[in-house]
Image (cartoon, rainbow, N blue to C red; front, side, top):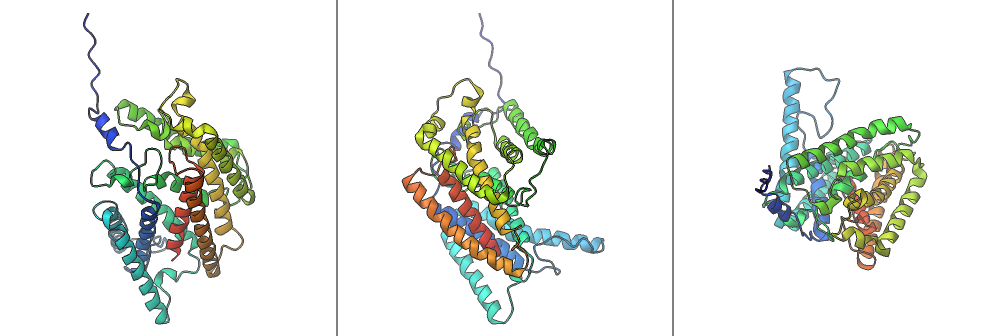
Length: 387
């Protein structure tokens, strides 16, 4: 009896593409730190450039509409693209081997610019706004989005260094920062950070439904076209949209005051790390999978606890640094910068100590070391934008 012919695949090179992004060990923490400090400097440069009286901020809604405003808007948009997006793309590709040199050059030029402006009796243009703290946070969130888009589009090409792609088990890379950066960026300006904790179940489910729908759409489309999916990242069926939805649901249903979310988040992270050390990490890192839904998606499901703990920390920091009683006016920007410096140093020391003595950074398990590194990178970027 003739055997049935195999179903033709939409992706005949699926296996080769999966190998191209597998078994990677990442880069060093120093290189990733240098790279993520260099990128916000581009925003500072953009803030210092004036075009038709506009810097990197929203277009004035009260301005009269017309052809002149359209040209001004397009010119500003083009300048944003040339000064921010194009250099970032070059940093991630053809200039990847010049990371340390470019970071040093940009930092020196920025410090010289500030020194020259201050010696002339004027403040640098990107420091001139007295109420710009939330604008800086917006810039940080935009940077996270642009980095994510560029890396996702570039990772399938050989010009994108393999050390910047997602690590297999242990290590640090640029793309490993994307997931945690999204969680941190969302938590800093979340409803909970703004002390809006009384949200009904219906509102929470409605606000989370787009993420759940996107998660199922991604699952259906990738399965339908036989797209390559690295199972070791989230599991067989899981994806990051489901993780974001789970974190949002947990935060909405378990009502925690922002004043105490930092303590609760720390307890969640320490408890989760304790479970990892006791043997959970061996289960998550093994290639053996059962037929049940939890075993099939063990990486994605268990990582929820790590990301939820990180989200709670971000809620507390957002409330403390941005939406608290001391977060208005020019003095608050200086107040925030001092504390961000302290927190950045603290998170860096914790990252090094945990990486050496507890567990190495692992994207798959979302261990405490990785979350401290993600928080530290977020604060460095936040401080760099605040200049």
